[in-house]
Amino acid sequence: MSLAESHKRLARTLVERGLGVPAVFLLENLKPFSVVAQQTLYATHPLAVFGGFQGLHKDAVGLFESRETMEAMLLEVERLLDE
Picture 1 (cartoon, one colour):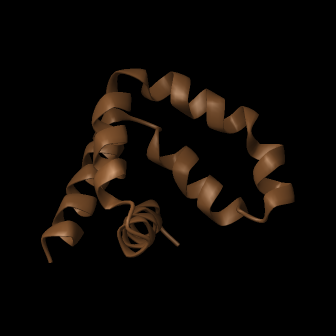
Picture 2: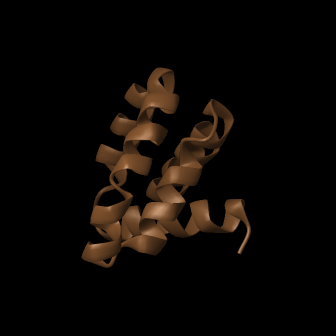
């Protein structure tokens, strides 16, 4: 699965669970701290393994790779919210 597909899946999951608006708020506020957020997610990887959230966790780590990927994710969540 490509990175773009996993971000679309993550965006769809967030919107389906009613977390679209909080996700937009969080992404907008975390843009300047994308490197710190990514490193924090790397540190929480053992919790994701034991919690059964490995796939979602991997998608979230990939999201914070760059501001461009965060912006693409933000646009996808907003597009899904408008539907």
